[in-house]
Image 1 (tube, rainbow, N blue to C red):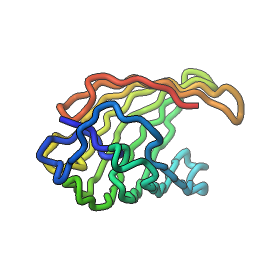
Image 2 (cartoon, one colour):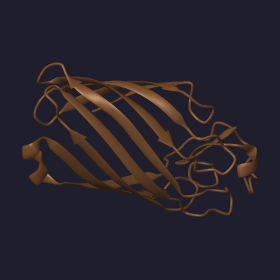
Image 3 (cartoon, one colour):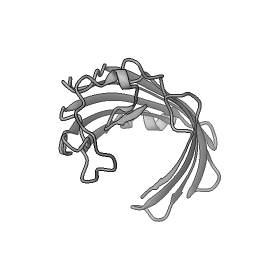
Length: 180
């Protein structure tokens, strides 16, 4: 299996025209832009509803294998409701992938279910189950379990730490990272 930039794991049969022979190419990848609209009039009932649009612009070098060379567009709905210190949440989305002469890609949907527990005003801990249809035709669908901690450093800054375990052959075995 190989990795297709922005799409994930791919089987060798997902490559239509792959003349690259080098490994370990490096450089700048694609640019991702997103915007979210939050429906604020529901917050009085502790319900949170967000609509997100995301665009992947093909800025990575296609010849080095750092991009598919095509634009992708995603739309996503997030919903959550606060019950005391616990916030169950769900996400559902759909991604339209740009068709590439090099890869057999397909549009795909994705979903996530989870919860956050607000341990203190600044610290939340949580878990989610993430599922998506593979963007490539012959690769297994990714399924992952993620645990996370989110710490609000100040009103404008937070740090998000996570660890994940893959539950299918289409997912990494383990992953970890952080966001500011």
